[in-house]
Structure formats: C-alpha cells, structure tokens
Length: 115
Image 1 (cartoon, rainbow, N blue to C red):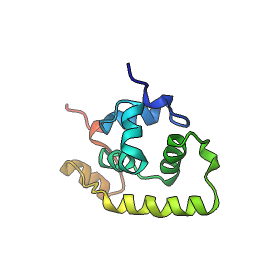
Image 2 (cartoon, rainbow, N blue to C red; image 1 turned 45 degrees about the vertical axis):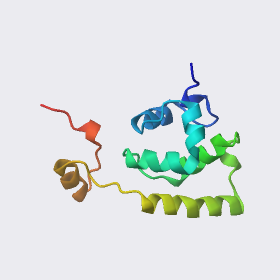
Image 3 (cartoon, helix red, strand yellow; image 1 turned 135 degrees about the vertical axis):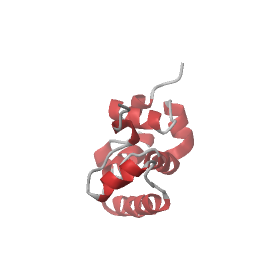
Image 4 (cartoon, helix red, strand yellow; image 1 turned 120 degrees about the horizontal axis):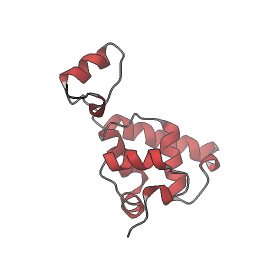
C-alpha cells in the first residue's frame, strides 16, 4: 500500500483530492513528478492557480514547513510559478463553463450536474 498524498508535510485532504482529479494518487507519484510537473497537472485538471499553494507544495516535498519560504527563495519560486501558470492551457471544457466564466462565474465540470 502506498502512502497517501496527505502524508506529505503541509498537504491535507483537500490537496489530496485535487491531486486525485489530476491523476496523482500517491505520495510517491507526487514525489516522482516533482513540484513543477505536479502543479502543472493540477492546473490542467482545473485547480485555480495560487502562488501559496505552489510554494506549500514545494516546501512539503522538501520536508520543510510551508512558512519556511522567504526572501530570495520565495522570489525565485514566484518566477517559476508564473512560468508554470502561463504555460498551462486551462481552456474551458464546455460551452456552458466558457459562458459562465465570461460573466465572472467560475465553475468546474464537476459543478455542472446532468438534469
């Protein structure tokens, strides 16, 4: 049995669910991918980009507390985050999602239920 994603420092059940949506189902898979590739997959799966989430992941994979990220290291991670964010296509999966997004309502495919 492999360790769950939430066994990694700083990463809880909500992050574990986001990873599962992105096809990452264990702590080892996450470690093997590394922070940058894993975060890109999270974005592709519909996770909203958020710098804190990215550096929490980086710190966790290094076994460090999330608030250990400071100064020049944090600035360098911000640059990497911006590159990852701009390189990932987050095009809407359906016309409904696109239309709602255009008027400022952000939803994910899972939010739209068949009637």
